[in-house]
Length: 161
Image 1: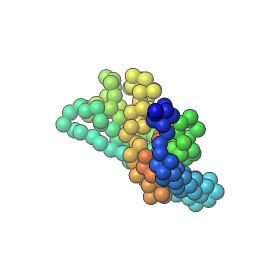
Image 2 (image 1 turned 90 degrees about the horizontal axis):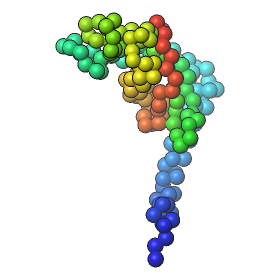
Image 3 (image 1 turned 60 degrees about the vertical axis):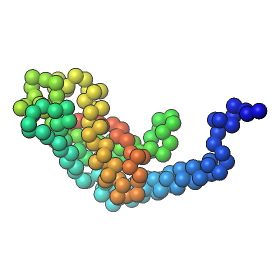
Image 4 (image 1 turned 90 degrees about the vertical axis):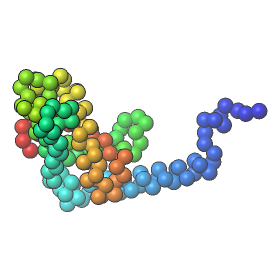
């Protein structure tokens, strides 16, 4: 007879390998976070860099048009339930992005600092997170952080960096 608990838990050998893999990932990330918190040079190296994320289709209006400049402002472990080992990266953003507004330019883009150019701040920030996540993950990969462990947390909008 088969018990229900057998379907819910993996075999012991599978659990051990998974646990060791997760432990190694969290250990590597905590090492980066420790260095980030303790060493001012590492913090400055991460925070001073200004990134540019650009994808502009001049043939016509597309949903993916954006020309954003951003900086990383803070990195911490996520405190969300079920998100163990995920890094929350806060960013400061300026630039243009596609908009549903009569204020948009010929490429369908408008300034992100004007809240009237977008349907809502929530949808604007969600789109910004989608555009920036790959760039931030690619940069933090240089410090030994796995790409899938990076999420964009707070998005701060400003006129210029």
